Image (cartoon, rainbow, N blue to C red):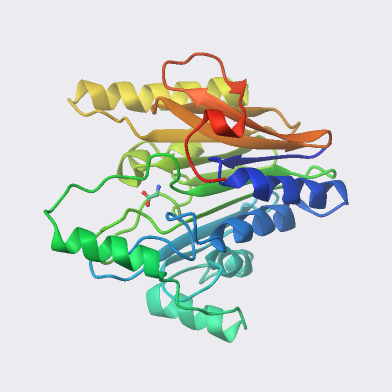
Length: 304
Ligand code: GLY
């Protein structure tokens, strides 16, 4: 039986389509990539792909990664501009024995040579927000609340697993800044023997706990995806709080090889979607650790 899980409300319509692909026999890697492409192509999502908000210099720079749960190979592109679908570049790089993580100009060159579509990823709306911000007061960097990284994990009917992530990172980030999204073990991890996990939120905090690897490690030791997510987030957040920090923008999802899902967050509410043969459903996890539950789209924040 297949299962697919994705972060935020923005993944909900994408997962409905990817769920239909899986039901028609598509492999996990295709379902993950197609779901993320749909999010990347939508300019209403200002934290991913086309229409992502610019960095401090007015450039939209994108990060994406893909991991194959059978081979443990991964591919990633970091700080790319003008690549229409960074996840497709990451997918193509996955499987290479070397040169599988490319940054900046080299990654763009790779995408161009591979024949991937290129486009100016800036939108008028995104540039307007950038102009407003640069002409106003300096405000602290803040991860998007209600959007951030699109992360998708899937297991297909044959048991193959894959993970993918894509983001434009923080609005007004410094040129060259990289978050957790393209970093294996922090933003994503997938080992089809034990499960897959991915993270979204403040990349600088997520990296400190190598959260995705931590969750899969706990699943390897027998934890359920839900318990592994809760424990990994609790450990990191409590440590940060002990240091006088908030750790208040960390959310994770996980999937086991037999299709069980997990999610945890330090936000008040973290929406995520799950597709199974019978249906695709929107859920929310809660920072106060009240139980995960199915929600209607208008109950939670964010574009859909
Ligand atoms: N989680 C995305 C980032 O920090 O860039």
